[in-house]
Amino acid sequence: MAPSILILGVFVLFPILQSLYYSFFDWTIGAVSQQFVGFGNYAKLFQDPQFWNALGITIVFTVVSVVLLLALGLGTGLLLLRDTLITRLVRSIFFFPTIVSLVSIGLVWKFLLDPDIGLVGGLSQVFGITPVHWLQSTSLALPSVIFVDIWKNVGFAMILFVAGLKGVPQERYEAGRLDGAGTWQLTRFITIPSIRPTMLFTTMILTIQSLQVFDLVYVMTDGGPVFHTDTLVNLLYRDGFVNFQTGYASAISWVLFAIIMLISALQLKVFRYNDVD
Image (cartoon, rainbow, N blue to C red; front, top):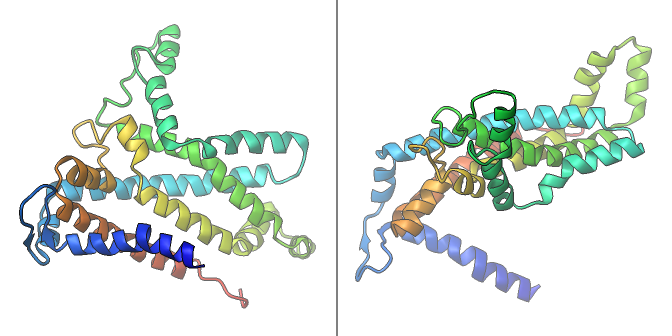
């Protein structure tokens, strides 16, 4: 285990602790001296309108994408639960975008949504519809990015739910049918309670991914137009690697870490599962 622990310590643990150290300094790359400011970066952070804008956009992105992914993932999982040639083929098609990198998907969709040379704009002109500037509109840019994120991850959610649904004992459904339960009642009182561990895992993974979204936003909009898709990690990148304000960017990263931990703790409480259930 020593080599793995050494690699983990050097490339994971040490940078984490170092970023915490940086967050207490007015640390600027290339500066002669780094001034200790204590919690000054955190105080500045909560007075920064760009931080609150990025936090709001990140929360909206997370809530909308996670809720829709859970609903669509569970729905498609129920529809494609049976093991037939057709369902296996459709499941593979849904899952395929999951294995493609976010950068590649972002570039493809940025091209597709381009009003001048993109496929979507071309089809709009064929049907006599004025092409829409999806990624240049302050009202449509964020929904467009959310749509692409859902398109990519719905197959991931579906596969997890299919695995969870296959683990539900059939005896429960048979007992429910003997008691006169219909399809909705079986889903509400047997299926959903039985897959609570799967719901917990899927919700937590999707939430953490959404709160940390960067690649898709950076490639498709770079936080624009006018910061209407500016997420916390995009703000962190801009402050840390463009403006070289390492201390301030480190403070953002630790606030994001605290938010993820808080939300994860709430999810664990909501989806709490034990043998009594």
